[in-house]
Amino acid sequence: MKAARFDYMRPRSVAEAVAALEHNDDAVLLGGGQSLMPLLVGRRLRPSWVVDLNGLESSLGRVAIEQSDGGSGVIRIGALVRHSQLEHHEVVKEVLPVLSDAASCVGYPAVRNRGTVGGSVAFCHPAAELPAALAAVGATVMVRGSRGQREMPVASIARAPFSNTLAQDEVVVEVSVPLDMSGEKAGVPAGEHRTGSAWFEFSRGRSEFPLAGIAAVIWLDGNGRCVGARAVAGGVGPAPVDLTECLGDLVGNSWLGDRLAEALAKHVERRIDPPSDLSGSARDRSEVAGLLLRRALRAAWDRARAGASS
Ligand SMILES: Cc1cc2nc3c(=O)[nH]c(=O)nc-3n(C[C@H](O)[C@H](O)[C@H](O)COP(=O)(O)OP(=O)(O)OC[C@H]3O[C@@H](n4cnc5c(N)ncnc54)[C@H](O)[C@@H]3O)c2cc1C
Image (cartoon, rainbow, N blue to C red; front, side, top):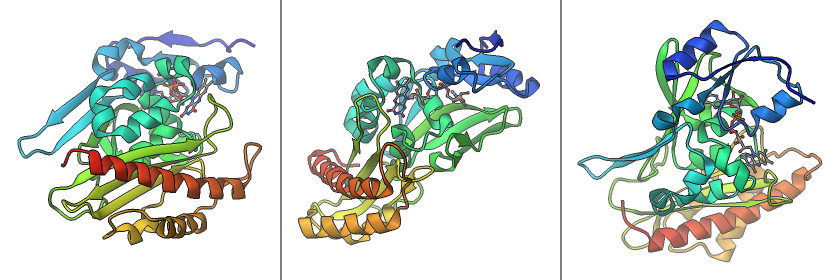
């Protein structure tokens, strides 16, 4: 099947893209096209205009690190940054390995070379890796529309599966992540910490969306004791599910022993209410989520022990 007829534009600025969306109610943005093109070709979407962001690569296609004088800093990830850029970016791999882990699990190389961070965040696939991993590191999303610019936590962009909270004329321009991964709700006491993060997932095939995936972040004090932990799951609900409230018992521990790991996994299994579908039953997803949680927490812990302080 071929896509229904549409008009095409390639704006030279975000402002031009916003204007195109504002004046055409059913115009859609094109990022990497990895989710949009199948919808167009299958005629499940019949927009009058396709507004192609790929002419804005020089402004929206970069990863920038901003370090402030006080030692804190932020990583700014442009909306057109491809999954493969995140996967291979040296600073991201070192400081936010949960993001490079997660990006490396998306589809296969051709998908990762085209698919974008902005598209992944806006598309709101409930099992997508990046929205869950970005939520775990306290990321915020910058969007621009006809009424100006606004910033929101990445977790508040999903309204429902495949539906976001953006206005029709809003464009995701950037995702930013604090270098200490603190975000707003980390609850980690002030002081010097070591942080580590990791993503683990289970999928039926290498190029498939995962049945479930877990992003974990661990903060350790100078004595190697856990002072904070955060975890977010993908694939187990209509949007990424924050599991941080299940991790309170980790604080004060110097390692995640088997008994504690078992208790946390059970806590998570009670907290989530996953769907059943052709890829897996709710019970499969619960058990897998518990198992992945242990692996992701342990990997994050190992990285925190080996890592730099923040
Ligand atoms: C074979 C295959 C396997 C895949 N496997 C996975 C997987 O395992 N995990 C995974 O997460 N994804 C997977 N994907 C999807 C892929 O990661 C997409 O890249 C991603 O979902 C959307 O990003 P995109 O840049 O391609 O967006 P597009 O397809 O261009 O757009 C998707 C939606 O987002 C909107 N949009 C795009 N950019 C913006 C923006 N800057 N601001 C606002 N709205 C925007 C579009 O209008 C559209 O509605 C797979 C795709 C394929 C084809």
